[in-house]
Image 1 (cartoon, chains in turn purple, brown):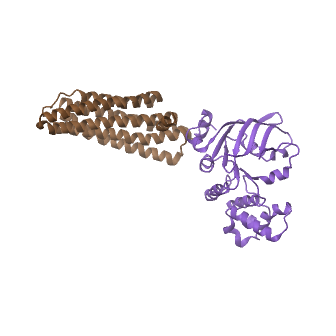
Image 2 (spheres, one colour):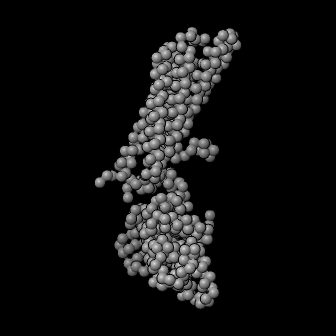
Image 3 (spheres, chains in turn orange, purple):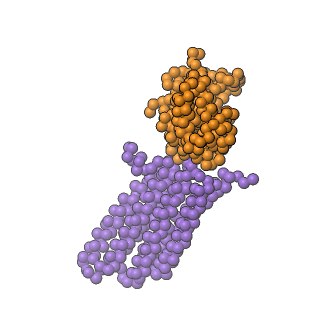
Length: 251
Length: 223
């Protein structure tokens, strides 16, 4: 199995507080990898290290290596903008721009230099199709994205990400603000997206990890306790702490 | 506020407790059926026959509660194994109950007729098969995978005694055709005892799965 990301001895401190403790992990290409664990265990922090989103926080200190396609993203020469184009992120709450559906999608390619209207039109359509939103919005591409439902907005954010042609999609609790039907649509979408992209997702919903992820990793107090084939994780986990957490004995 | 996990634990424990009760009822039914045969006790045979309905009711109750917990609690890991094995184990236990009932019916059919041969091997095989079931239940309570594996090994002993017994009965039937009707019934009883051993083996395999999370056949293939 080819790896999209390789993490070696990764430690992260917020000032004096160590939030990630010596994480070693491989994230396989074209699979859905889910991170689970109680609040404050470091899973979202870890997700954000994968496209250097923590750079924006001043007191953060990171040691170890994160290799994306074999290149260490924490090397000084790394082009962070290019990295975040390659490794995009979807957030907990959908955050469309206050502009039309079309412009939301075209925004990324435009700032990366694409001005050809025909190319942009095509990009908008393929991105919306990729995010399973095209059929619902094709007749109102030029109305405000703010009028879409929460689930549609989240798929728009995914489409916006796809428009800049990333390789890896990071999703931080992408369904936590959505109703069950919208959640189901996003989950179905994950299955389609992994054919072309590598997906890494943080979720608090264990059933969601069980339903959608190929690999599940359990985090506790900044440590990665266990990373497993999802089927094994939810039927016969190796570590007692994992078993106790997923069966609701603590958390 | 109700503790959700504590309530779930209590429901799981009740299901396991009832599974053990079912195990106790079927082993008692087997003992009584054989005792009825040995002592020509038709009243005891009738008690076993009518008692089977209680075992069947218990099976349905365990299955209903298990399915309800699966639907409402979405169990995973060991919780899921406890519930899935409960579903499988009740089926085997219920079948053992059916075999006891059938043996009791055969005992009833033989009634006060003199036996064509002294009953030695049939009670011996039955005792061994019932002990297998009892040991599985002990392994279930103490979560002892090795004890469950030992049960699986002892199935061949039951089969051996049953084979000797069948040959013996055949000999009596060949000797005197008047022995054929009762010989046929005794043969059917032996087949039932053999099946009890097989169900005990199934039960043991489920106990191993419950404890280790691994299927025995797969473990053997991997060796």
